[in-house]
Image: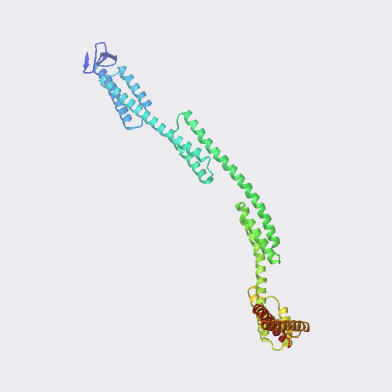
Length: 409
């Protein structure tokens, strides 16, 4: 019989291992000596120790899952419990128990960490959903659209929740995106329709502008172009690919008209400045007729000057009142002399003036006589009244006599 601190071999070749629960049969050995039998089963024990060492290291240094670690521990435990090795099996069993506890602790820690991550993911996704639902009502199409796309990327980076919760949140999130996309599509469809309507309106404005570009009716056409410009501004913008081309045509038509008008106006301005110079010369010539000493000669000369004046044509508008005022001043001076001459030579007017003077003279003589009579009678009140009447009639007589003298009387 052969023995060892952890086992022995009896005479029949049966190998035993010593445990805390007593000896356990390891196996039967008939192929060699008892020492060889113990050595063989001790090597098997050493193999279990090596496997246990490796498993402990893997659990400690790698991210071996709890499931795989538990399976490996149970596999080793079955071998230890089978007592097919000679060595300190109780120590190995204790190490496996300790390792199992470590794995279970890590399992619980991972479970708690996963639960926390899941809760954080749930909270994050709920925030994403809330923001998406808020953005669904936004009219900031570009900004909100870009933000929603960014939210999708954030959603994909978050861990999945349980299927029910994840599906419910995703449904709300997707619905918010769809609602925004539907509103945006409707908005831009309406905008496209409005811009197409604007394009058609502006096409008509361009046609009108081009039709007017050859007009030489300067004032009304310029006013019409101003009206067309107001309509253009009020119409809004057409599609980008049409707007610039339409504007170029519209502006080009205006440029043709206003360039032609500018050329004509420049020529006309030059002509009118020349006309002004000629009229200023005529005004100076007319002013030399003053003061009028010979009415007939002055009237004939002014008529000739006026005929040449009328033949000249227009002058610049801002200079017209000044140069025409000079001619009108000469004309008024001649007219005043004519009126004075007419009054002086008009027989009917002279007769009327002589008659009025005679009537007033008779009235004054009569009042003189009445005044002398009242004074002689000592009637002072009547005399005072007659004096006042005589004073008024005498003033009228003096004025009538002065007028009569103008007729050479």
